[in-house]
Amino acid sequence: MAGILYIISAPSGSGKSTLVNQLRSLTAGLEFSISYTTRAPRGSEKNGREYHFTSRESFEKMVQAGEFLEWAQVFGNYYGTARHTLKDAETLGKDLLLDIDVQGASQVRAAIPDAVSIFVMPPDPDVLATRLRNRSRAEGSLSEETIQRRLSEARREIQNYRQYRYVIVNDVLDRAVEELAAIVVAERAHRNSGYADIEASRAIQIADRCLEANAKERLQPVLASFDLLRTATATV
Image 1 (spheres, one colour):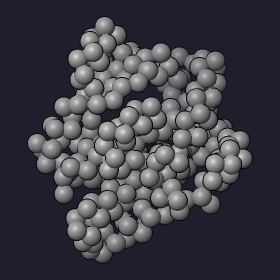
Image 2 (cartoon, rainbow, N blue to C red; image 1 turned 45 degrees about the horizontal axis):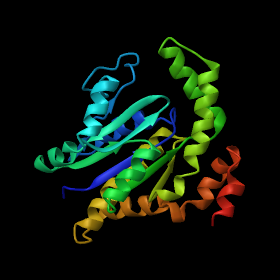
Image 3 (spheres, rainbow, N blue to C red; image 1 turned 90 degrees about the horizontal axis):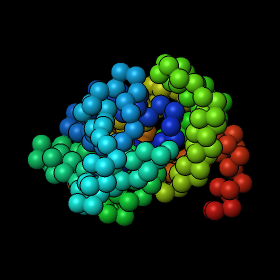
Image 4 (cartoon, rainbow, N blue to C red; image 1 turned 30 degrees about the vertical axis):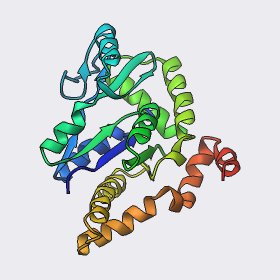
């Protein structure tokens, strides 16, 4: 069944890109929205593959023309999703996956309430810092100031996890990929008149464990490691 919009968000360095790439290789009928950004390409990134790289002037003209479904400024750079991506996916008979930050996700949920939102968490700050440093080294630049800024931003973003329907902890890659793929299958089954074969039934069970409302025990160690457990408890 085509027409489902999936939103996936995560702090920088959480392994979201790896998860999305794995999901796309395993799941048919899923179109990936390539965002626009004003930041420079990293490493082996190519224009039109990871992002549409553009100038601030061009991006701002697109904003003024109302061409974005959502857009935000993150770490001094613009990121945005063009409105036409939804119609393009529909024309192809596919579901659409948006890889966007918490600001953009909030805009999309407001515009499209039935979108399926998924938040990916790193297991703890130490693992996140290691991933950020490894990525920075691979890109040929390492700034401890940047690492600390991204860790601080990650803590702020994680506080928004309750706004998402599903939450995945990316501590074991294979399990996180299985959970993400299960969410896609489960949502398709729910919207296909509730029909579920054996494979879909198993996916629904896995996806149900990832529902934010059902994942409290799983999330407690992560929230505690980011010193957010008290904050989460206070908002219950």
